Image 1 (tube, rainbow over the protein chains, first blue to last red):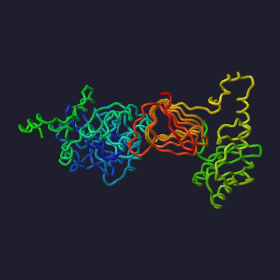
Image 2: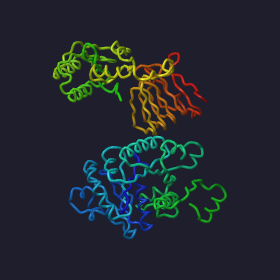
Image 3: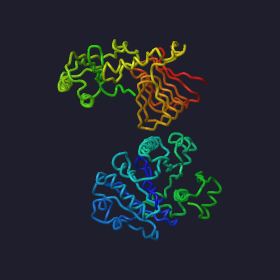
Image 4: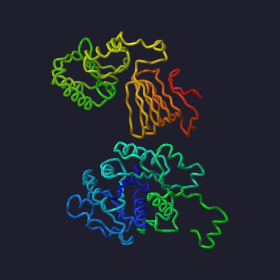
Length: 266
Length: 248
């Protein structure tokens, strides 16, 4: 029996879909059976980020409306042996095409076959959010170190508490250590002071994310990517390991130039 | 727990019902709310006489007529309709009860009398000398909240509110009495919401986005304010909201 995680944030564009893709691929690499569910119906992105959009025949709405079996709609990611699957959203419908009851049934079915069910939640607090949360047992909140994002995350945590989803975990995404050092960006303690939930991990701002998204190859598989390293650490924590928070300090001066000279750093 | 400012208030008085409406509310919302109250009370209000008071704002004749029609449908006869643009505190009816809060939701005069009788029961032990001191308030009730309030959560209470925890930005507390936060207050507070200018807002870390006491509104100075190091208390002094250090 697996566990159902909803990855949510409130605010849009903070890295939910990116995180689902990377956590999914990372867990699959560790040998876990993972299914990722895109509930952003009408604005689907998870398929694109994984490079699987050309393989979509059936989607989540086809499943709930009975036009296909759940198994038929699941897309297997060939890069990960038999471990990673995607249930894509529909692009030509909207978030009212699925109900919370249907989501509960769906996640129950998926739980039985997979170790991890990762639900990619859309931005907002309306039907899309309610659908994504309906079958969830655990929640992972994604936030950026930035006031509007934290404000929205706080709202979401309040709503999750009201739905009996307690003890969500936090990922702070897109940190720029230099800005934090200068005092121009919120630091982790400021964020935890307001949100007061457990920290699952931190991910630095990283150009490799842009590249990996465009290529459809999650950064967690790229050993040269700092963001990828951060996601690998988070994956290990989700798996029960204790991993210290990575140092985000950029290497300075001599050592950096030395490494670049020898092609040991980008 | 009483509600107020949240919808029309139906009070009992010697001469019949008094229906107090906050004129700033959407008339349709008021109609719906009255409809709800009347239907849940069934025959209770039938054949009653009601005086209608619309406070804080003027309604058009049309809008007033709609309320009248609604009341007629419930067999309630309207004895008078008054529109008042200033807050009126201490209505004569209130002095008959124990003089606390302006707006209370009560269904009938009988229930009110029953409640006030309990408070004045001579067989109960006399509260000690403290109750005669002006600083000690034993008439308003207090709601105690032992958790952090998150963005989007709104607490409304007829009385004092005490929070053990933080109040995050985007959260709001509206109270007819004082608001005390044993934590960081980063939201919006409205103390003395029914008009009590003596109400205060206090917190271990007072960093509100907006502060309101009675009819006064205040906000922090523009530019990044320093995080307060010590507990602070906000109250009305010389015609504005002033913040002082408190117990530190």
